[in-house]
Amino acid sequence: METAEIHTRIEERAYYIWEGEGRPAGRALDHWLRAESELTVGAGPRPKRLTSSEAAREARAARSGAAGSGRKPRPPRKPAPSPS
Image (cartoon, rainbow, N blue to C red):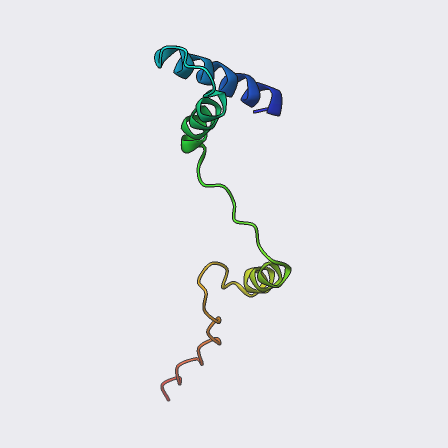
């Protein structure tokens, strides 16, 4: 969804909230923030902003296959001895 479309939807929702509350004066920001919150709830969580060291740590973990686990990857298992 484009930014202009999101802005329009928030604006429309804020207007309906304002009307529903009896058109009170001085509450535009409250209505805008409530509309924004209502419309972005279903959009999923916003990504967390990472520091450069956190981003580097996550990149290393992703390359090593341990992304998201928060733990160091295990070394490969040694093969079982073959029966003689």
